[in-house]
Image 1 (tube, rainbow, N blue to C red):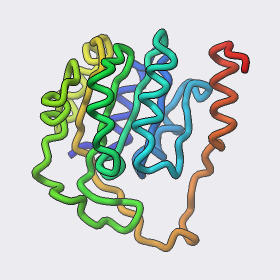
Image 2 (image 1 turned 90 degrees about the horizontal axis):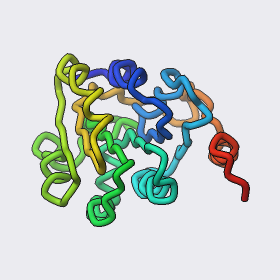
Image 3 (image 1 turned 120 degrees about the horizontal axis):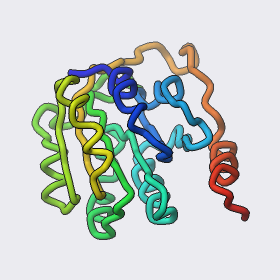
Image 4 (image 1 turned 60 degrees about the vertical axis):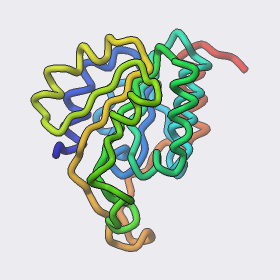
Length: 195
């Protein structure tokens, strides 16, 4: 398994000007790796809906690369979105799934069927243009450049080390995220969109 920090460290030099959305416990680490926060869209507390939101961004902004760092727990809450993505075939969409096999936010309960699901195989069977699976950092590092050049939708499943949060929510040291309305306003300004 790979650490989420290492995934982001390897990915960031290949980001280009992509719009990034990240979800789950691992997604909270993305802001520390990002070199372009004006192109980061916070979807905090949208478990199960982040995939649809990122898909919507890809459809609405076809000239912009859109990258989602998803979590398997969130994806399982809205699995049907994979069929919608495959149906629309957004060429600008790269869907990373950071699979830690647990619900890390709520104490580490195992995700149903956590060791048997082949998410990349599922995405391939449902119609994603390209799919990949990694559980080795070096292999991921050697392929990330070509993955980011592929025509989407691209699905990349990565087994990551779980970082389980066991303390009560009110006692956790949470890194404050930019509020969703702020991220949307900053993205609009970055893209020159007036509404």
